Figure 1 (spheres, rainbow, N blue to C red):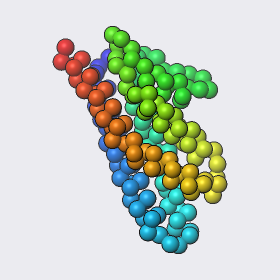
Figure 2: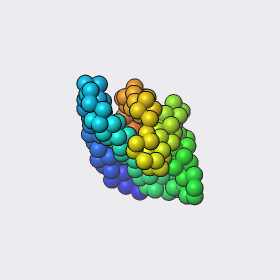
Figure 3: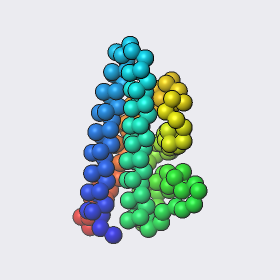
Length: 161
């Protein structure tokens, strides 16, 4: 296992997540100022799609960790939720927990929302639900990035050994 490579892959994904957050910021601000219904609907769809991408980016980070550090990636129908659980667990002698219990709960809700985005037609998305989820992401974003950076810092300590 090469910690430097893992750290680099995580850093690359964090940059993409940060860009997605910027897109979300723009779309939400534009939605607040938009009065034309068709554009409002398009912005809600864009927010939902970017929330999908945001979670997918986080999940990619977790897959790298599961494959390259844990050497164990969940399989089966519930692998997405099991991967989240795996990332919230401290593995003594292998790695610290990647995310907190609070992050686990919020990311699990975002995972379920992503499933909805994948499963329904966009016109079926509820604007208020999309806005609730994006606001939750905005409120949680700094903590999530800090937890991921703390994990990367722990990898740097391993590299130095």
